[in-house]
Image (cartoon, rainbow, N blue to C red; front, top):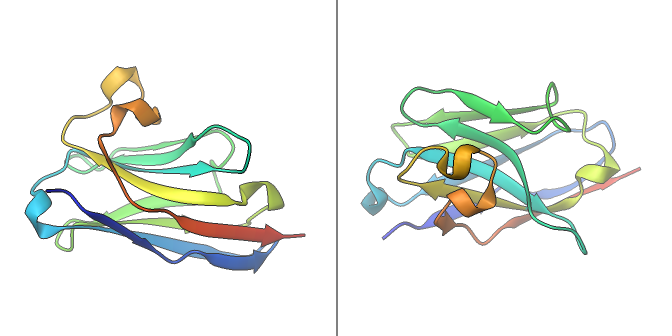
Length: 127
């Protein structure tokens, strides 16, 4: 059974930084893809960043390129999202996602390509 536990959300002023963590349960085994998604009130869930856990390739939404960095610690089965230069429009609930397949649906940032999801952590950026 795959369990994903996120942590690291919070409130920060514009221009600040936060780091999110997502730990996958040991029983999950080897996951091929892990990603971060976010959903603001009244908006659809959107892909933010993803990583190929085997090869380490990373993928980003245009809106966060150059500001966010996804990384992993394979020994801990944990993925991180370092968020710098935060903007008020980054305010959302952030969700960790994982799957045993890579890039399903042709996009690493497509929510439908991930079968397993965490509970989410709130990020609030004030101006």
